[in-house]
Structures are given as structure tokens and as C-alpha cells.
Image 1 (cartoon, helix red, strand yellow):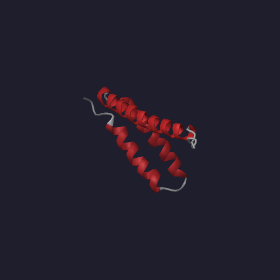
Image 2 (cartoon, helix red, strand yellow; image 1 turned 120 degrees about the horizontal axis):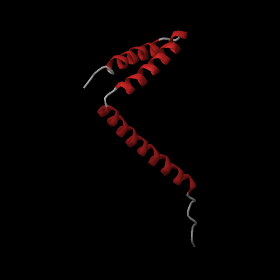
Image 3 (cartoon, one colour; image 1 turned 45 degrees about the vertical axis):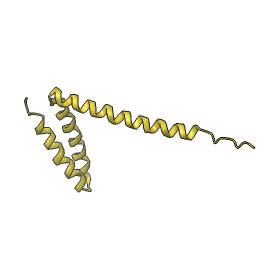
Image 4 (spheres, one colour; image 1 turned 135 degrees about the vertical axis):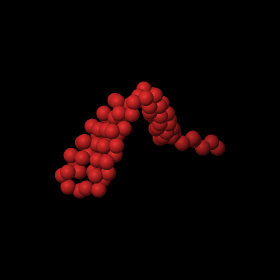
Length: 84
């Protein structure tokens, strides 16, 4: 398994750290560079890692959709009427 994807990943982590610590205009440039490096590392990653990330994204998305659905059903439910 080729580990070439680790180079842009480490670059993205380093520039992300610079983005969090800096407050001037260089932070925006570092943020853009970190995002591009992260996307490049995901493209270069082996299929096993990409597949694992895809499964994680599906699980997280499913949980978030269930939480959102339960919130909407709670909002749309009307209070039961009292019977005498």
C-alpha cells in the first residue's frame, strides 16, 4: 500500500494548526491550502481507507438524520386533549 497520501495529509494538519493559531490574513491562505491538501490526500488514499471513511460518513449521517427526524416529529405532534 502506497503511503503517498500521508504527505498532503501532514501538510494539511500543519497548515490547519497555523490557521488556528494565526489571526491575520495569512490564516485565510493557510485555511485554503489546508482544505486543498486534505482533499488531495483523500484522493490519493488507498481504496481501503476511502471505503472506511465512506462507511463512517454513512453511519454519522444516518444518526444525524434520525435525530433530526425525531425533533421534527416532536415539534409536529399536538398535545393530547384532556377528556372528562
